Length: 404
Ligand SMILES: [Zn+2]
Image (tube, rainbow, N blue to C red; front, side, top):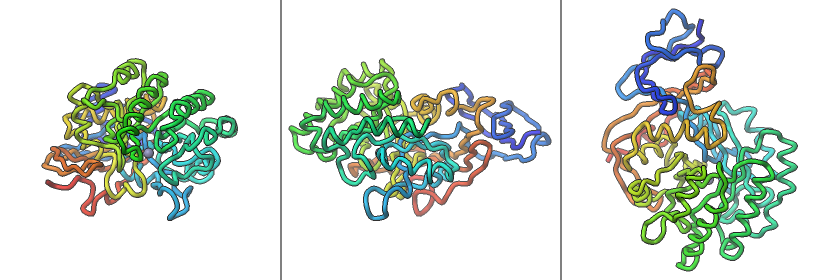
């Protein structure tokens, strides 16, 4: 007897090569069977999936978010999201927090956030300022802000907690000692044997000389990266982007990708330029992973599903954007055997979503408007066999992007 049968859906799992009408049986929170025509009588509950454009995909992974909810005093520093609000109630089964907190207040995760979250939460610690809550533009102002000893102690006392180390290349210190900061952050990640994730796109570096300097640092970063390290904000229009002034990717980008570096998109409120994304698509520089970079402020602007729809407007297929938020994200997080696939024996993490065709209006983070032909909306989220309904949605009218 199965606990739950997902019946009649169009199953799309690009990582497993599943694309068609299949039923999925769940027992004890795990995927028990995947086949067409499973019997409703064999399950305690049946979830009938009907309707044009309704798909069953592996539980979506948002690998760049900010969910250190409660670590920041309201009104001070960056507001974070409730992990379940942008997780299981938004069609997402796994979120990564990417450096909302530093080594001294990382303890908020095991003490308060992980015990109550229904969404799987993965944490990247901010390498910068000791007790960190993203208070201002710059996280690292001197080499002393990176405390390798404290990071090692935090990892020793919290086994399995730190999945990666996060650095933001933002602020004036990078103009002078950028290479040294990158090198020290990489050493800190190596101490912990975890990936280094680095934010490119410095909105504080606006003059010509600073912009040129940030370009140099991005090239240095790409050469410093090792397999599994993660560049985030691939499509940033800000200084430090991966395209040279003529619109060609720096040669280090292809070298890094060939070496197993992950290129994450993390759109956020500041780092998605539609012209950059289109140019990159034209030259075959596609993102490995799509993520939202959601913060409390961002929650009323967009969602992971809307980020996926923005990439569909550039020309990526539904399978492409699902791949970028499932199997590819699982690999980027070092969990390819646990996440991102509809496979027997795995946790039953599923997202059921509607793909709506229409004429939708989007805005990039420079304010430039663009249109797209698809909008995505969550219908149900299944996390380890447990079913969750979506919240109201990003917009006053719900989940779909604005109509053009
Ligand atoms: Zn972020």
